[in-house]
Image (cartoon, rainbow, N blue to C red; front, side, top):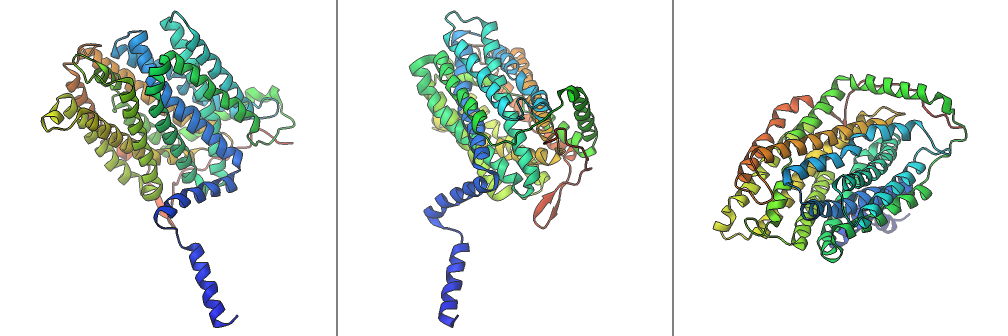
Length: 481
């Protein structure tokens, strides 16, 4: 090869490795990243993440949250403090995620560990949403049962795809952060689409009509269960299921006794509890025509869509800038900013923004976007930590246990916020003490900063953060023939 050819060859090689810049690079970089995941992890797995996290949980959460809030407020006509409690009840299936995870890890159906559970989750969701949408004379108890059934469908699908994610994280440890980012991106983009469409759908078909739309989204889980790639188990001794459950429980208990594991669980729970969820009180104030902001359904949906956009920004920030940063630094600053962002609600409720000529809608949009961006950025590192703490063989169950702790924290936060609203006499039409509830919540958010010592410190090794924990050896629970 002469000098001229060598120069041309090296130039072409450098151009291939050089990152794309400008608008072209902005488009091609995520496309290449997505294509890399499809190539490394199989298209059906990536499709599963899109359907579960992007469509079922993402769009489903966007449509479901707004429709449920309006359903409780306008159809069932409950108080905001009661709505907080009912919201916690609806989330109970998410607390049972370890049980769903245990079944997906230990009990295959017709020779498959994942496929049947996706199908079952879809069937439960479709039936629950159709029943709720067709109910003519809504009864609160039946409505709660239906909403809880829909929540159960989402939870079962989530724990099943999480098991797939953790399974791939153990076989492709270098892609663990990328898989969590894929889940977070799909969840945020889906929620953005769901919240954007929620207000218009509510105006067109009402809350119960939106529940009918959700039944279609649950139907996609049935399709996923039919196409996702999974190795067929030719033989399985169901008589030994009890022994396998015992082995799983023993392995989980041994892992939970690990110093780093139980401290991480405790921090995850407390950081959520001290968040004090009072969003139902704010929602009632947003939509109250007399003493509140009198926002329409379309406006409320658009506000939540900006919140989803903020959450998406948090995922992108984590993926591109904070993925390799130490836990304690990220957790400290995000928790501090999260507490400070809560004061934006205080400024709005006290009408300080109006005195400075800032429109309510603009201020609420900024508030929601910033708060959710910080919240997502705060939680992403803990998701990665959770995936790396899972022992092989029961990865679905153990990751579900971590997420169950997450939802127990959310339920505790919702109920604590409901008690706070009830104690301060914040009702459907009375919001005089709402500012005090916001102030108490903002102060409470500072408490987890003092609990950061519970999160294990990680040590960098060649740019890859490695958590040093006791390795737990465990024989496979299911033998492939």
